Length: 162
Image (tube, rainbow, N blue to C red; front, top):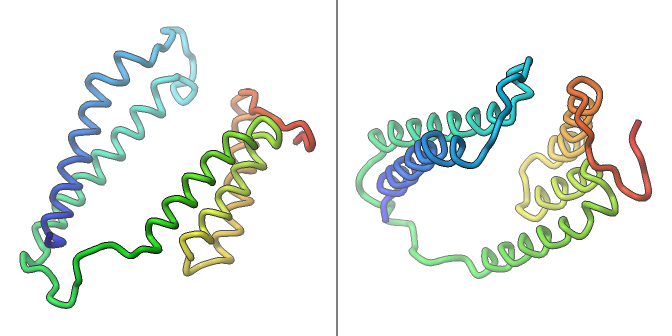
């Protein structure tokens, strides 16, 4: 399959998913009280934001597919790399271990470890940036939700954050 067809199908799929979420999924299954004073704290705000971002990515892929050459790359060989299946299996193991670690280590520490392990599993080209993000992003999200929004973040049994 040519890169143009792949981009087109992915873009079309992303747009369909975004529409389905915005028109059916979020209104049907995410309940929100009418008296939420801050829109960012509304339970529907972030799902709608993700649906909108998914729609934008889909539109971007659709537009990018128009400029892609229709002929497949002659040097490209169809088939999958056997290591890809190993990485997929390792990712499944990481997900299962994440569910095991969440109640024991807490959400912040587990997110740090999973982010770093996943980045190195897929051999990132920027290992220092991945490690910095693995530490800073969960800490920043914890600081915002625990101290600004007043939302309780699950803590672990061993190390508790302030």
